[in-house]
Length: 88
Figure 1: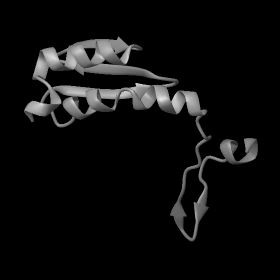
Figure 2: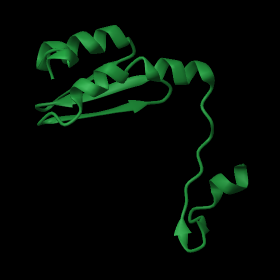
Figure 3: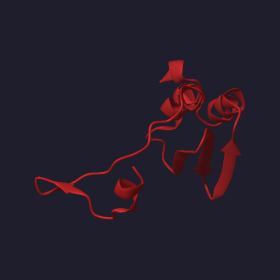
């Protein structure tokens, strides 16, 4: 795995491919807890967001940036800005 990671340009049949390590089950669950928040934020003007490892949501909106490790706090923030997912 270390050799694959150290290889910058890995190709197969002329196509560039990327290989990522598997995430531990606990990390996958923690990241999945942000799914509803990400759904609310998707396609909103002026919003950029992403998940940082292991499970921290970064949200940029109108020049300010917020970080969330608590999915419930992130959901409340998104709903305050844009309403709930059910309203969409």
